[in-house]
Length: 170
Image 1 (cartoon, one colour):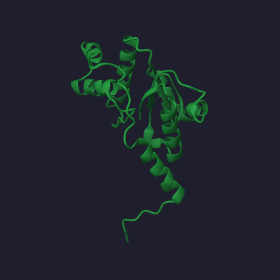
Image 2 (cartoon, helix red, strand yellow):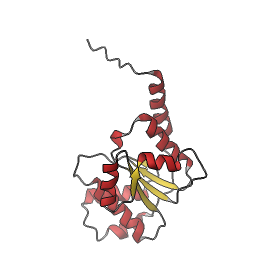
Image 3 (cartoon, one colour):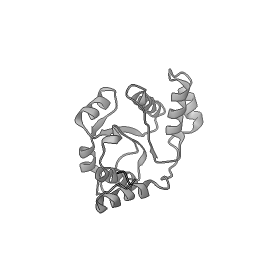
Image 4 (cartoon, one colour):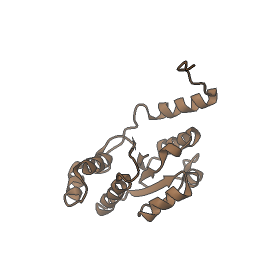
């Protein structure tokens, strides 16, 4: 009989609550680019209007974390490549860095022109030390649904601790 109650270990519940607490309210940041600069870059883009709107939101938004969700092949990576092209074309100094929970997902990002490593490599390099500061970075985490709660907490801690981590997209 379904009682509607889900049993979970207390430490897991606490970690999940910590994830929620670390993103509520959203971390506010300065937009990466002005709307005018983004509009200028998108003027000759082959992106569809709804894709342009997402790219513009990612680059001019005021929250440090965004979530892109969609089925395989709908264009999520195309959007990130457009973000990277605009950041490169405007000489913003912001790098796009990808990370993924598996080697194959990280390789797929690299194959599409987005520098990427596994999450474990990313976390071993940046987690737990304020001395290891990222350059101004637009962080892309692919296959976010595969990330366990412990690693998601660690990723969010890096985002919060690194002063030059501009935005994160999961």
